[in-house]
Image (tube, rainbow, N blue to C red; front, side, top):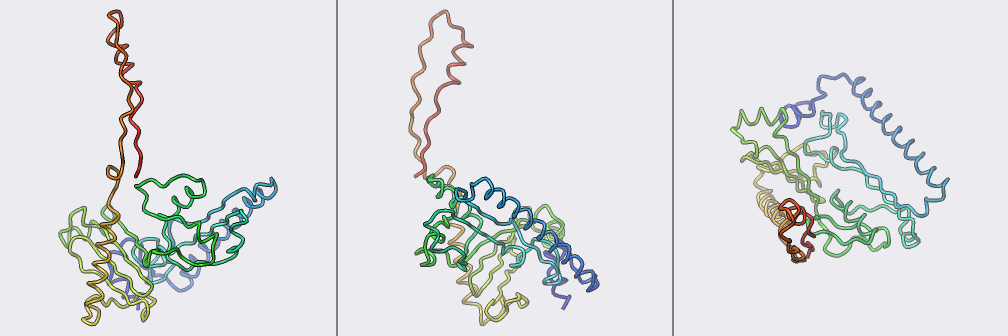
Length: 287
C-alpha cells in the first residue's frame, strides 16, 4: 500500500513519504506530535486560568483554531500540505461569554465552516460592518441558536495549495511543461465527494467519500462518475467566479476633499506643496 504515496509525486515530494520508516519510528514521531499538542493545551489552560483569576473570563470572546493539520503517516505521508483532509481539517472552538450563547454551550457544529469565517465572526461580535472584500460569513449564529446553519449556508468547503516555488513545482514544470502560474491545486469538497483540480491541464482527482473515506481510489476517469465530475467542475467555476477580487468594485468614492487655500505671493512653493499633501483623502465606502 506504500505505492499510494509514490503514485502521487506532488504530495510525496513535498511532504515526504514514510514508506522508508520503521513502524516504531512512525509511532515515535506521532508521539512527539501529540506531546506538542499537550504543550499547547497546557498553556491555553494557563491563559484561561489567568482570565478567570482577573475576572475577565465573562467578558472575553475566546476563539481557538489552527492554520493547518498534519498527515502523521496517514496515506504513508508526513507534513501539512497536499489535498488530504488530514492536512486541512482543523479545530475551531468558540466561547461566547454572553447569556445569549447559553442555549448552545457545549454543543458541536458539523456544518462546513472555513477559515475565511474567522474575520467576519470577530467583526460581528465587535459590531463592525463587513468589508466587501471579505469572503466568509459570521459564525455567531451557531453560538446563539440550536437551529443549525442559517439558510443558504455553504454545502461544500474549498481550499487551495500553491506549489510553484516548491520541489514538486520544479519537477512538474520540467516534466509537464507547466508555467509558474499553473502550479496550483484547488479542492472542492462536499459531504460525499472531493474534487481536486490542478492548473496546467493536469488531470483532476475525484474521490467518492461515501464509499472511500480514506481517499484511496481516484474515480475521475470512471465513466460511472463522468456526470458528477462535470457537475462538480461547474460548481467549482461558479464558486471561483463569485469570489473574484472586489478591491476596486462595490465601492463608492465620495469626493470630500476641501478646496486648497489660495496662496499669497509671499508663500513659497514648498509651503504650497505641504498644504496639498495634507488635504483630507476622499472617503471610500463599501457597498
